[in-house]
Length: 107
Image (cartoon, rainbow, N blue to C red; front, top):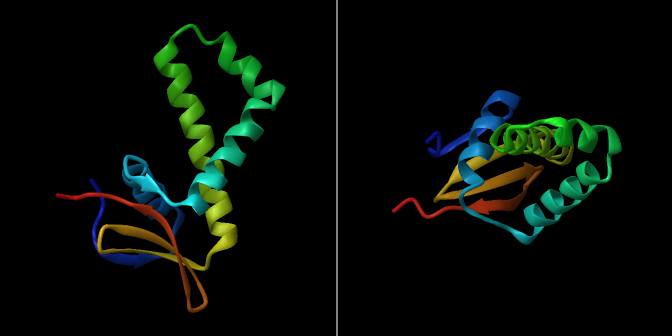
């Protein structure tokens, strides 16, 4: 688990923190992003054909999650200047505004 109080901007840390917080509770903002991205993937014929040709269900789900996470990271990087983990919450920061993305119970 990579969750610790910190501020960061880099993509690698964003991937790690996002992966950890995905087991938490998404905010309505984050849920909207995830739902839109999942819909976009599901409507992309090329991706769905590739996934449907995979025989191993676990590998197919893992690839789907990887594609989705990559798109979420790109969206978050576009929408925010930096990110912060504090008090078991994951926030996107833009100027002085902090938007809750995920909350997680660490206890």
